[in-house]
Image (tube, rainbow, N blue to C red; front, side):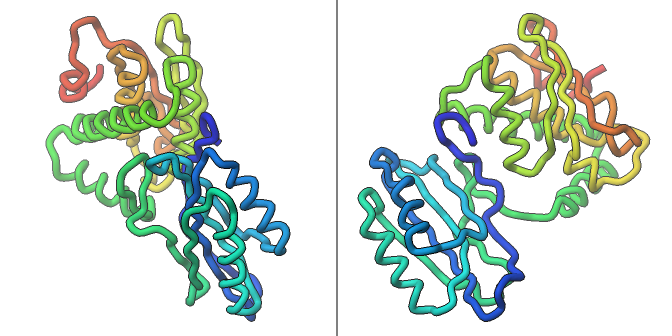
Length: 276
């Protein structure tokens, strides 16, 4: 759960091996966040015996609206409209949509999907790694390019986060940890000194290192760049981040050294030249 009840959406789909005689159904409920609708939605669902297979809340919708999406199973198709009508009667609920996942395997509720305020897609980490490997094999100074790409992504993520919740140097690293979990990138452990603005960020189960396979060099340069961009935008200092150990090299975790860049040095220049 994020700051002030904001939930970072991680999974927008589900697989089902439940009752083959039941229908796998999704409901998408839009509501005003300032009218106590969330609690009333839960009460109604409990009252009519809806058992959640999977659900998520997203309170980052524009104009003070939130979205509650859930998956469940129902025995009779007629039950779906009954549930719809009861949800529509809840004070603060503005729209209810529903549908049956016909193949019982996968169903996305929202199209296009959105994450951190922009369109997102769900893909296997292997697909991303194929792109990274092609860059490494065919581009001059690939590590600098990947660092720059991560830098831009980290800055953009920080700007969006600051626009939807109170975020500053006191809580930004905790938010970053949630972002990594929500996006499936890895689990962050931080040893960071706020006074010196230096330390280490360890990434357990990095999606890049896990899928990359054995390597003689660290492979998570994109993540280094993302952390640097995020921290630079959040804290107001120019940060440099360097991966010094990587799971792809046989280490238990991926470890990134964090420090403030020398005064007057532009972060993009550091990234292009490579951090020594």
